[in-house]
Length: 167
Picture 1 (spheres, rainbow, N blue to C red):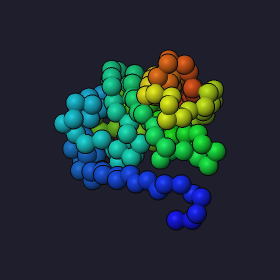
Picture 2 (picture 1 turned 30 degrees about the vertical axis):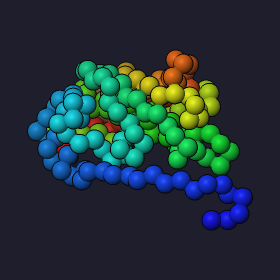
Picture 3 (picture 1 turned 90 degrees about the horizontal axis):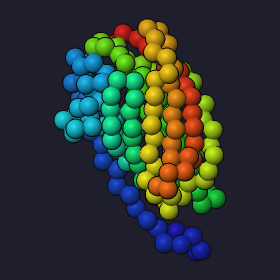
Picture 4 (picture 1 turned 180 degrees about the horizontal axis):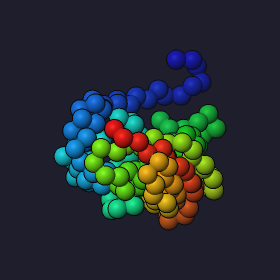
């Protein structure tokens, strides 16, 4: 450690094998797959464990996730890195689309467009992200996201599209 860098901190990251989850979820509809994750009967994605994303609500065409960022997500200017917010937006857009898919179908992001409206810090409180499918599709589906801080202030909005494909 270099002089003047301050106290070093540690964070341990634990995750579960994503292929076990993917294999177990192959026989479920998208909404049932996400409900199983929310209820803890299926392991969350490693990225969700890394950033502390938790599924709060799931229904057809809509999901809600929460996370509470800490300093480990800071950029060099003392704010939560926009990449965490973008990942949260991409996650709820994709999972919102996933809730509309039947057994045997998966998705991947094509485009995500994020508008950052307010800075996020560890003092912003839990972030709540709502993802809504705006247009389901057989090949391409579209969604939107809104992320609010602990005071209910919008910190970011996003739109995105997902490629829908057979598993």
